[in-house]
Image (cartoon, rainbow, N blue to C red; front, side):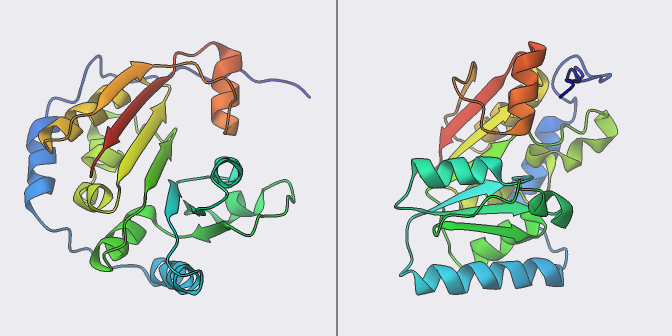
Length: 220
């Protein structure tokens, strides 16, 4: 199998976005009222029924999980937890190497930000929430599409007991860290070298020699 090196992030930004503070503060102080998509509501309903059927177990959320490789990894690492992987692409979710899913795994197609908002209104809390190698949206004008620049940031924080973000773009990790600080959360930001890659992106970045960054925070 041939190997295509992962590209380094190409962005006009050399540091955090100039409007990060004003945008994040606005999102923290206002309610995001965009209508929930039907397919996201349907996905949450599937999760909620299964969660109740299992007697409300401790749950791990793997947002934007792609093919679900990381979701399956967490299901093996935390066999007593329900592990839920979310992704907007049905194609990615179906491209899972035809591997059988463990009984504690659920993969759902939805808009992650919709799912977060429904979970907040339903007062659901996830013990661990993973955000692994999100789309960096490197153009400054797309800042509001980054997790920390999105209007759903308050919901992300409200449903998560702890959050771990991994990225190969230092600026993204720094911005996420700064957004958490604006939310009065004491996070840690560090460079890290995973012993075992748990996503295809992570594997590719390691082979390409990319620096990898990690932000971790306990929300409650």
